[in-house]
Image 1 (tube, rainbow, N blue to C red):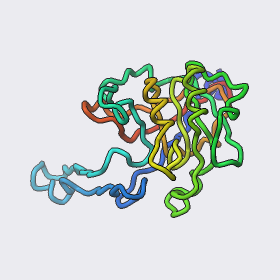
Image 2 (cartoon, rainbow, N blue to C red):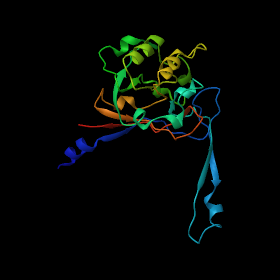
Image 3 (tube, rainbow, N blue to C red):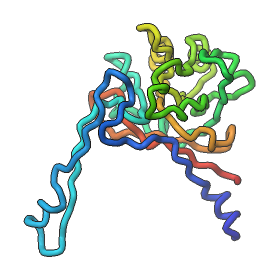
Length: 228
């Protein structure tokens, strides 16, 4: 078997997540993560045999940090939380990429001709180019409520976007979160690198820790592309 044949069989991984860094802002008004040592290497040398050292890190952050996944519990008190997610709802899903147009509001017509049933639907807006800049927080692309209803009714398994929020944040309503999470459809926000994916022919995963009583957490979102 040639290297190319092996690659077609095993697939190629594409990372779709932003790095989480000390002091970075994901969402204005929410605190930045504090990343530090709980046990520094120099301190550990007095605890272990000569030549042996360890670092134990500590992070203090809100759950909406970096690239993260929303569960129904994020929106609904009786919804499924992180611990309640089944792996088949967030891992190894068949995926498609839908490239949005130039408009800020992405309506249902953006999904015309796309078979979304049972798939992770990743909306590529290119807004990740503004990550870690002030422009990221203003005038971002978002889905309309009608688009969310379309995706729900068409059987989407998960919906992701490479923008600041899947909803319009100019007001206090969050209809896309309301529609999708009520239907048990997880949401992944603040993605990146969607332009590196083909329209289809890949598997998508975004798996958070199994935490009881929490509705959102960062993920290492990634795709595995086959057949190249």
